Image (cartoon, rainbow, N blue to C red):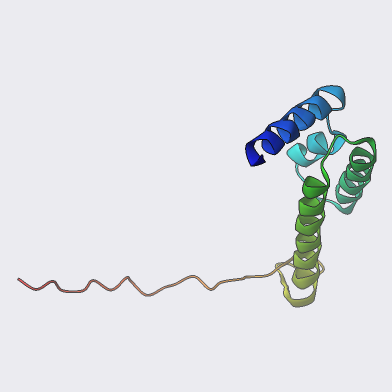
Length: 108
């Protein structure tokens, strides 16, 4: 029963991909570095969801990842430090470890 359902879902997915290649995929593959690109990706994703070229699960995952990207931008603006006056702000998430790694002695 489960194998039959998986087989049916795979056929449906393959048929959708052949009929309507997702526009949002091409945008995402180029990378998202500006607000305009992010807006374009979300707009294309909505179109892809409505015309059936993207499954709801993929749409949900993309929206969740986009939300995390926006949160990172917000935190960078709030807590980041400008490298130059009025320049881009960078936030250091983890301090580099300056201590050498400990080597434990082995029993002989």
